[in-house]
Length: 278
Figure (cartoon, rainbow, N blue to C red):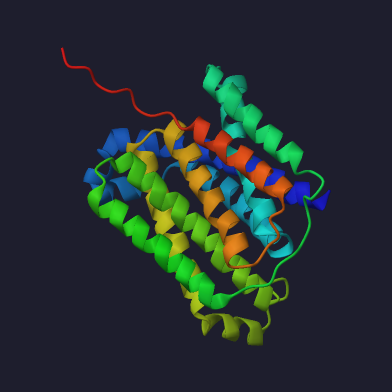
């Protein structure tokens, strides 16, 4: 029961936060010209009530999400976070009267099927960790992300990729620290140990970059693309990290479950229609 409270609750709060942040940033962007006028845009965002309400929802979600990561396997927690775009789509349908396309309905079915398939193993705790492999994993993904940033021209895709990679890697760093430090009881010794641990700064760097690009992407991209794409990447990175870094068990049932969830997340991604030449 606690597992579902610490995963479904944050997924719902993240969905609310995404909608509110996107609403606030879009309004500020239209009024100030967006990131083309960074100072005016920055001041406008900080004075926007919808943005602050969205940030508050995301902060509440993050607390529950981090508690879940500290207690359970990443490969169990991360697929639950794909409920974020599912709930976003359903909230849009119920509250904003947006249309649920056949593609989105199929995507929801894939996610629900994947989570239902793995319900028997949800909440299990297994695994150890290999810190050297953690740095190798983070380094490889960082190089891939940098390459895409430098050579891929679709800014919406790049912003969303960096956002998903950053949040995903920050989750892996956090899980690694949670296995070595008692983060429920932060004493002086624990805080000093964390400050001297390079993993903390890896976490700070990846999370900060991801948060920055989340705000930039919301100012110049579509939530319908950004939220599901970053959620898919943000779920895939820690899930793979669970097997590579933490030696989490991946029986056939979990492989099928995670695959269904990630396919469902990918189906949420709606690309821009190509412009036809007249």
